[in-house]
Length: 405
Image (cartoon, rainbow, N blue to C red; front, side):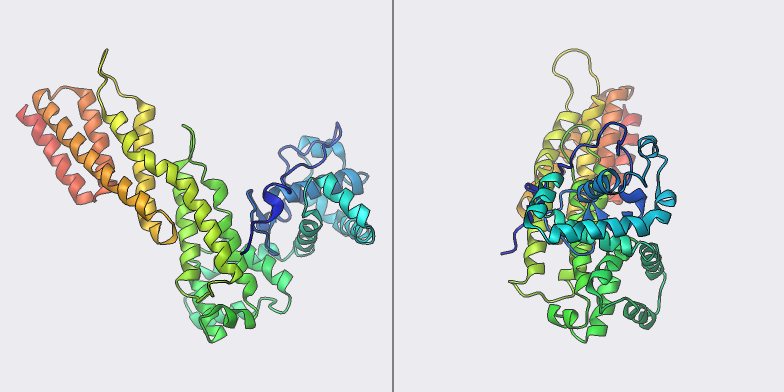
């Protein structure tokens, strides 16, 4: 069974503190030169084509503070005036310094342990290797991103296959970095997979690997994992729109793999994707269970005092219904069937109940603006939960109720 890397706990970001006058707050690791292959925490499964943001920042602190302080001015770092343009001319010296330092580490077991302690990361040496590979490939990363954008407009499948074969398939490390950078720009991930299957002459993982495209599969898994950081659905300020986009992206990536490629049940890819799917589902499940409750609380009239609408509760209810609809579209890639079915049915029943109740109240008092506002919100949610035609029917019923009143 493939287990998450120790980067979740043992490799938690604990880089040594920078001394006064050498602050990295707000600065991108290495001036943004390798942003195309940086992924956000949690990085539970490491891949050769990407490096975690915390790991990259730990390497950047190490380089700027310990290896090359005379090349990288502390005052410019602190003021945010040291970026890619300033770092690029220094890269030959920076890479030479990193190479020499790692050679010393590799020759001394105690030095390796000191490096891990200094970085606060068990996989510090492996992460530095990927970081250095990305720095060596820095000039190619923007070109890989351009390739990814071009894929969106390539209509000829033969041309797409030719473009894929131009990747450095004989260099797995370089291919991993370039595929990761490119995939971030591709709107429809399925296109690359279908093209690779044609080139490989088979739809199983072994055929894909034999033709040098294993780094592409890893890029899909890395990007799928990178959606976890955007699925923070707790608290009143959760960004539901961002979460919905991340769920959709995760679904597209997962379906591109599982819908077209045959994976062995015990393969590393199968186990990693299964683990990521479970973690994505675990982040969404608690919020799904709250949708019907949030809806009832938002639509219910206060039992005491003056009638009023709680805007935060109403916004939470509407956001929850949008999340529910997104999960419906992505449920084939999630492990949420039972929870989703219950939330879906409860939300539908609650909406119909509140719509009918507010229609009745509006007939009794057409001038009640709060009842009208509740009804409008319920109709908006019904459009998402049911369909636009049903919502339009409800809008006509609302107008009729006001007239009869």
